[in-house]
Image 1 (cartoon, helix red, strand yellow):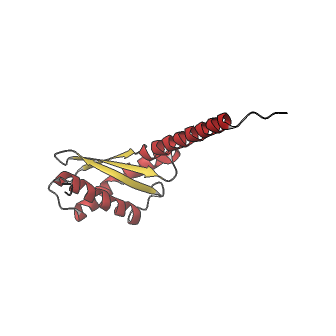
Image 2 (tube, one colour):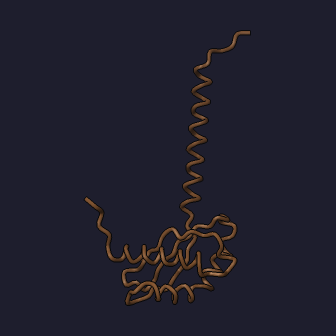
Image 3 (spheres, one colour):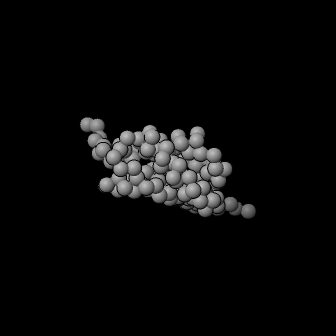
Length: 131
């Protein structure tokens, strides 16, 4: 049975796609270079949208990217209004998405634990060397 999506989820996804295209093609701010929009969360009344992004430069360049996105917020909202037809156009709030970094960190911890466990198991299985 296919999963049902609410209107809010569909609108949030449409906003994410349109903003991603606007950032990629229309935004000329060099601070907002290589980012990916990962999610959009809308309030039930569509008045506010949390826009989550990740950056290729990592967490180091986030303050500059956030400043660039905030400065471009009016432009992005206006252009979004031309592309998405909804009664209330949400105020955009940008947030850095740390989930990819956290996932990578956890994956590295798991890999290291597996290697340590394999090394320990291998050392226990090897008979002691007689001189």
